[in-house]
Length: 470
Image (cartoon, rainbow, N blue to C red; front, side, top):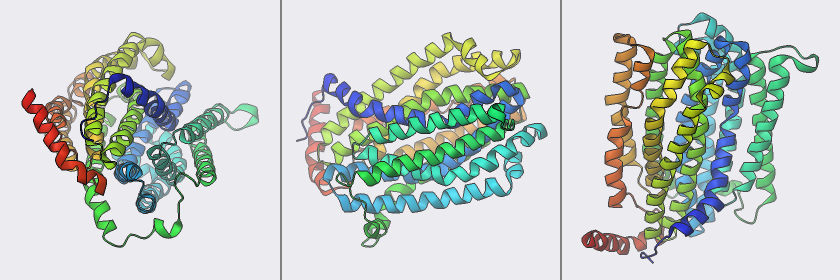
């Protein structure tokens, strides 16, 4: 079973049937704050900068809970390959409980004292004044965000890709319509500006969760969720889950802290630079959200193969995904560079911010391609059962290279903004060299299911024989 060869035709068929819908759903589900930033552009650079700073807070929140979701995806996909329904139930309940705890912590802080949180990121009082009402309202949406994510991950892992896509489309439409009404004061409503965008985000979160729950309750044949099994974490299961998830959780948490430090540097640049960064983050987010979806899809595909004992198939899928995604990223970034003026003009930026934005996209043409390659490989490591190598590599490179270089450039040397920006991705090239070696080695395949573990000796022998032939 370890000698299966995955052709490119078979691979692209999998991409079209499983990966593309997941990528589109992820793209749509992560665009709420991006839509807010674009639609708030008519209110001026300060409003764009304020919503951009608030999005950075939401990014830190995401980093703090995503480790639990990503760990859940690892177990979901491998348990699905082994058809272990009880295991899926227990992972869903444990991941949901942990993620809700994080959402209550962040949501409570955002609602209770938004000015203090914003003050960590920027010293601009006018930006804080605009951003505080926005982040206070968005704080109520944080629990909804984690519920939607864990349900979506469960459905993706069990190859039900359409319901999350439908719910994301409906949520995005709701967000857009409410933004249009509340930001600009249509149909006699008060002109709420940034706060109106936040209300749109909150209501769209409610719609997303309700639609997902409707699909989940309707389909009980694929996987039946049982409340008793969801919270039965005895027999060493909690230890097993945390053993696999803790490195991922630490990875996401420390990555979020590193990005927070970088965002603090950006928040102390000029207002034009902050606005340009907010616009760039939206464009970067559109690109990265799509490919984060592809990465999630690769996790589902690789995890299913590894969990069912088809280890060589999982290995080959991983290598093909790590070639496809960076190639598409480069093409999209190149198109973005060619269309930089019409894209950046959506945000109401001034001349200086437009200048910054153009060259930020140029820098990202190379940096984003490398970053996507690293991201997809790390996701596949996790799906294969290895969560330590990618975690240590990312955190060490981030805190020894990227964070100190960016901090020194912006806060000590006070270099021009584009020079500061160029240091943001300095760790990616170093990571790429190590991850390419580790990917080829196959050492990242460490199944958690009995079927996968039984196939491991044969896989290692086949891989060793292949290396000898090369």
